[in-house]
Amino acid sequence: EADIYQTPRYLVIGTGKKITLECSQTMGHDKMYWYQQDPGMELHLIHYSYGVNSTEKGDLSSESTVSRIRTEHFPLTLESARPSHTSQYLCASSAQQGWRYTEAFFGQGTRLTVV
Amino acid sequence: GQQVMQIPQYQHVQEGEDFTTYCNSSTTLSNIQWYKQRPGGHPVFLIQLVKSGEVKKQKRLTFQFGEAKKNSSLHITATQTTDVGTYFCAGPMDSNYQLIWGAGTKLIIKP
Image (tube, rainbow over all chains, first blue to last red; front, side, top):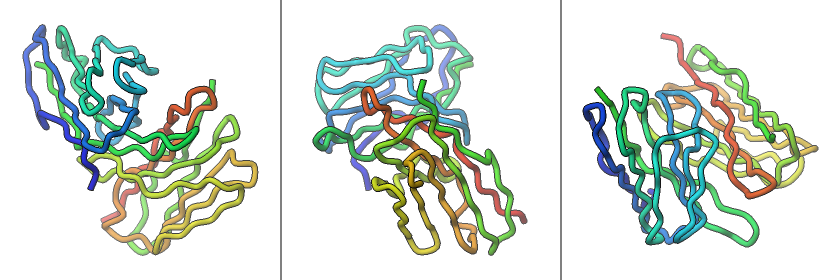
């Protein structure tokens, strides 16, 4: 089983609130990702990081921000939650092997509902 | 830009029937990965194919990578209820090895 953890698993929050979704991995992986996914639908990359102090925006326009101060920790912050942010957020990581990366290991996800 | 297209979006089968999902990339891929996501769960890595024309088997699952390394398929023989879920393919972008994901194929077992 992969050692990547997300908290909380479920979150219901009011519009306008600031929230941080936590993601930690103990595998020492350099690369980490955040995906947004509606149930059973495709994965949309919102942020990724190649390592400490490296963050990039993904394909899906997002009002969230991320930070990577430590290798193992990659939190996602929404400054002002809106109902349109209601979704599942999946964190993942992968290791670099030479010029390529290994498969992605996913956390169990945070299911966010904004009311 | 690079795209990975996956079909069909859904496949309804009777238990015991076969299931196949196909991935097509707009460019040659260095490798292709397959993942399974159970309902309510998270994607879990199944396999990676690297070589042109490669075929790999995992029990009832057969994975193929095309000769041109632009397409791939996953075939499940004699589906069981434990196979239910969404199957995703993913391949790395040329520029930064970022994974590009297919939209997934949902396997549904008819009651």
